[in-house]
Image (cartoon, rainbow, N blue to C red; front, side, top):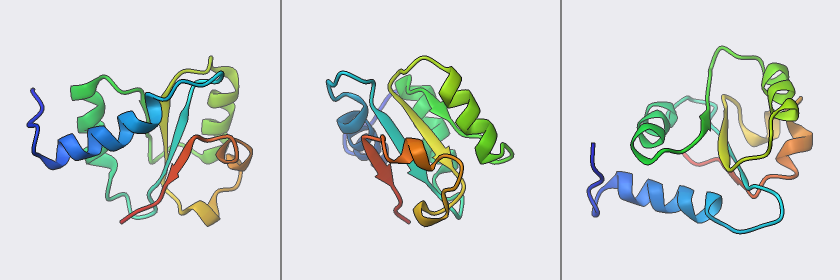
Length: 105
């Protein structure tokens, strides 16, 4: 699959790469809040085409995501949560460290 330079996919990739491509002492975390699950298929597609590390499992409890994140080496990645930013609970400590938090419909 190749990227169309004028597509929605290209715009999405540019947004994601603008965050994950930043140089910083700690690998950037892009936290994606999606209470309606509207972005999930698009993110999976972008991750496959563009080689983005995406953690997105709508059936995984936020506490499990937090534990996994805590135990994993820091790499540029998107962590998708099926809740709004204000509804983040267990992952709140990492939300505060995120390079960006996305919550757009």
